[in-house]
Image (cartoon, rainbow, N blue to C red):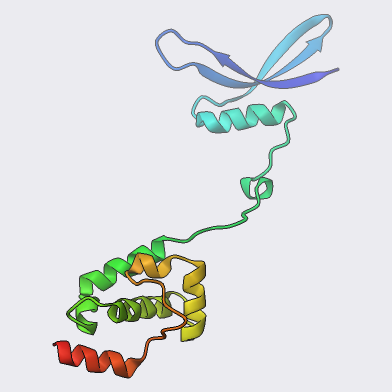
Amino acid sequence: MIVGMHIHVIPNRNSKPAILLRESYREGGAVKKRTLANLSHFPLDQVETLRRALRGELLVPADAAFETIESKPHGHVEAMRRAMKRLGFEQLICTKRSHERDLVVAMVAARILKPNSKLATTRWWHLHDTARRVGGSGGDRERPVRGNGLAARSSAED
């Protein structure tokens, strides 16, 4: 006795079609059908997945079918930028915009997002555009930020 399972869609005039899981088999010389389950209340994507499985298709999870090569994060940087803006962090450092102030703001954001040394942070900036998104210029290897110069300049400007 050969048995085949399939999904049968039966249209209804005034309501949604009935979706049934059925089994076909031969008894004597006649083909007969037996209803195993009513799938009418299942979401259509699940019914389609079941239909594909009954056909013998190989179903794999998406993470097994694809390999992530690179992922560029953004949400955490945007959240940091908005929080600093809401708190008035830039004006706390220096009231006038300057290259040094932008570097300090970007460095503080980088220390929170990816804690590291100043040199490692500068290297990280050159690989990612985090500093530009936060508001800095990305750092300068030849011109490092010096705390004393910024403090003297900000006190003279205020």
